[in-house]
Amino acid sequence: MVRLWGPWVPRTPSDVAELLDGFGPTWWVSGGWAIEAFTGVARSHSDVDPSICRSDVAPLYRHLVGRQDVWIADSGTFRALLDADDPVPQTCENLWLRAGGAQPWEYDVILMDATSESWTFKRDPRITLPLAAILWIKDGIRFLRPEVQLLHKAHGLRPQDQFDFDVAAGLLDSQSSSWLRWALSLAHPGHPWILKL
Image (tube, rainbow, N blue to C red; front, side, top):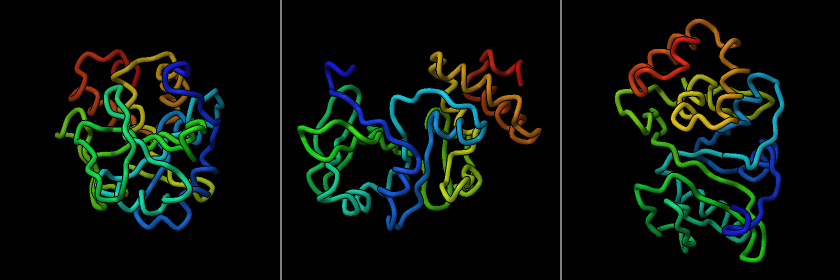
């Protein structure tokens, strides 16, 4: 991966908070860092995943202009976002950020199917919640709730996803565990995590 796309700078949720200080729309940290914030169990991370609503790409571009270049990472293809009005394909789920063309990548921004009011699961639109209900705060930083993050991780079942489930599942309260079981049954019937919740 590094050979094809280049190296990544190790970043943390605190770095994200500094980068997005003053950014008006709601943002949060998702991915493995969200699970680590919940469990307190450290593991290595290949990147950090700030997340925004898909509709907030233009404000993000304006917030970062002159500091970070924004690249559309869509199904193995890349192109630079050239201005705030440059359209992002609906198939694109990630924006990669770096300070310049000769610099390593720094942030993998996840575009969520969400508005300022609600969130919809990208793999099953029957699963939806108010945006505020999928977020929680630790040390002044918003994170994706663990049960919602595990739902996103369930599709891939990579080793790090299984690790995150193993350390987080037993710490979920009964309401969160029940919701995740319901959501997995709807989106991924027969998923191996269902019986463990």
